[in-house]
Structure formats: C-alpha cells, structure tokens
Image (tube, rainbow, N blue to C red; front, side):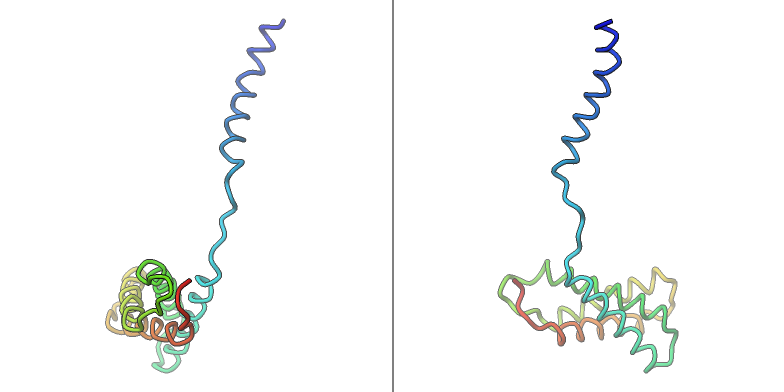
Length: 133
C-alpha cells in the first residue's frame, strides 16, 4: 500500500514542485509607459498626415504607431543616460520603420511611408525632449 501511494503521488508532487519553482519568481509583463505614449503620438501623427495629404487613414495610423514604437526603442538603445535624443536619429529611425511597416501592410508608396515615419520621429522628439534617465 505504501509503495502504491508513492508511485501514484510522487510524480504529481515532483511536477508540481518543479512548475511552482519555475513560475514563482516570474513577474507579470508590463510595458513601459513611454512606449504607449510614443505609439499614441505616432498614431495621431499618422492620422493627421493622412488628413493633410488626403490619403487613407487606417494604414497611416498603423504606419505611425509602428514608427512611434521604433523611435522609442531606438532611444532606449542608442541614447546614453543624461543625453538628449537627437532629432535626426529619431527621424531616421521613424523613416526606416515607416518604410518597413508600409512594406508589411502592402503599401506601394515607400517614400510616402518613409516621410510619414520621419514626421513621427520628429514629432516625438519635439514633444518629449527630456534626457534619457
């Protein structure tokens, strides 16, 4: 009887112990608030640029949001602490992300996509000029 209980319970206890030890220290995933702010700024800039240029709104919002996320990440990777982000670097990363997002969404106007992305990078730099912490 004792052996039967050990054979029945031990595998379950071992699995429970391993799983709980693995998941216990895990933190819930939470995004930095600056990412959401820059995605919002990018989407708004994409919407405004589509209204000004009289083109489709939704693809430009997607393009702007992607460029905003790329500019945010480029700031984290390429800007040293205490240094103000460079407007040309932000515009360049925004242009590259805008062109890439346009390629993914099957939009044929690469220069227009890059221009929208560069505008997003410049607007993010103007609206959030504080040095990186």
